[in-house]
Image (cartoon, rainbow over all chains, first blue to last red):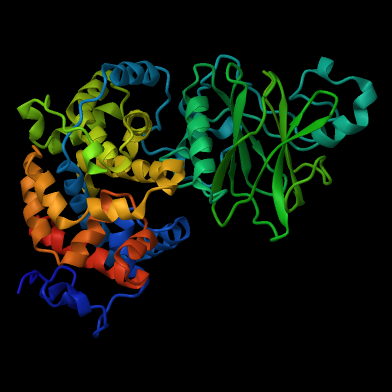
Length: 319
Length: 200
């Protein structure tokens, strides 16, 4: 009776409300099981795994995309039907102060590019450092010294340990656009850990870092492929690493983050895996000291207390 | 739980009109870094955003926190708004709902929610009383459209959207299999789409 516009053509949408409690039995042309998740998807009722699975399906099915677009609009009407609540004046005041120092995603940028171009090739407009002291020059690859870290931080006594971290190919540069692009909406790339509380804390800390007035960032190539972007605020003593295009590890391995001091001593700062994503980010545990270097190694699942393999990337935050 | 949501009586009548088209235009200015446009957009949508978050989250302080996150995200990602995919208000409210649900699931309060209280709050009788005091223009349209759903569809949609319950929680609350909940949510949303005249 109703719904005869034929926009979707799913048989059971035409069923009478009084009868449709039995309408899940498939007829011909019945949508696939995953397509049936559209309603739960727009209502945010799916689990994280199912959500990801559905979004993959969404990318492949124009029919489902259209359905979801319409349902999203419909859900928003449900939202608009709720009694408005006037916020406290503080909310607007805080927000106006925050946005004044919060960078925005540029329009149509390298946002979706899988890797970051090297410094010399990067469009200057997109590489404007946010902070005042971001490194401007690419670090010499294969260097005998460590161009990314001031030499006074590296006493000779620790030469061996330090060599582990610093005598690696490192490309350092600033790339606001590429890194910021990954912050979009948060949830899309927050797939490191399924625990929602943890994700929330991570997202809140990420927001703090990216909105800090003294935020700086730098990108380094990962020796096994991909890039790692370090974003940090010295005021907050916090940093976040955005990993793009890194290799998927074996199930019994994990990437581990480290704070590296000038003498090569390493302090564990958290674990991450790519989990099938092209890009993931992770706020580092503990406090980041000014000028610290952040390293990443591959470790056995669960992480190690000290690195057991050579680093695949080391990123210096020293100017 | 619904009765914990204060009914705001100081909403000016003009805010009852849907600022949907205006929101989209303002968003394109916000994407250019226009802080004045952001302030306008905020004024236009903040009460709606907070209203929705409060409905899901109940807790006033946490709701304002989430609203702040939403607007910060609006500022940061305005350039990703695509008018071809829907209105500006839709974009913002979608973000608000997502974040409210994330928060409710992550908070202890969310985990400890008494399912019995939940189901009582979302029974049709209770809602039909509550809805008589709602003030937005969409409120009446949505209430009418809701009447076209089957009881199970209506309960499932309301528990998921306004309660922030996952499909498995909804299944538990309504004592039906998860697969049934999924199809009811989809059927319910399709019916609402048609009743509300949403088409792309």
